[in-house]
Length: 278
Image (tube, rainbow, N blue to C red; front, side, top):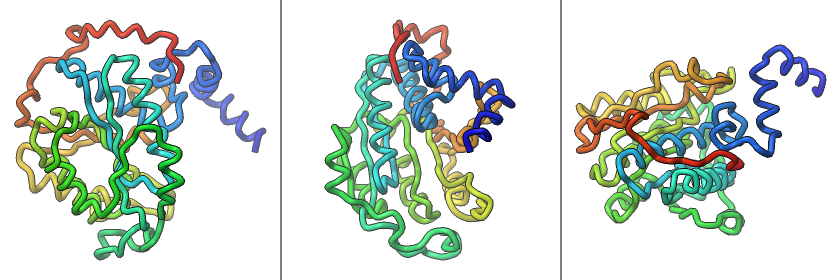
């Protein structure tokens, strides 16, 4: 396996560069992000660019969410990324994780792809996870009820990035209630990562089941809210990767700040992030 790994590196110079950046103690967070030299670069990408949008709009706080926490590795990573990005961009980033805790519920029908997912998959050890978390908030229960309650509760910093890892069509569609929340609770463009739109050969994801169907049904039911992929993202990345096809954006065309101009020439964030380690 070691020989195979080195041969694959030598066949792709970008992977060699990524390996060098990953091992460099002087590489900045932005350098690591550019070269995918981070754990879960999709979480870093979504959090970082959501935070840049928030700061460009004059905000000093935002929220990032993970829907489908399971063992908690993703939420721990999101917590760490939020801390780093918060320091670089001088923004407070709240972290919230949602999970049923008891494992996956019964599938509704074929749209939930029961040939892949079964009730009870991915249970959570709640106390073990709480010991690993430093500040992330954990919301437990069915997203069909916890998401509306979370929105109704209010008082949260605008949501900028959401990682969807709910597997089922039905659970994902229920979670989209986030985007029907008041505009003050969301950035005008919420970056999203969908875990289950790309998978192994036996998964066979397509537009008529799972998360992709949930996205399509949501879009057909909303005139001014649309969840779209970031067109051509993999062609802009130094190290193209499957996660590039899993990044979407929830566009709220009626959001009061949607049309605010935020070209990089206007951001003037004075980042000073060089040397910040990932």
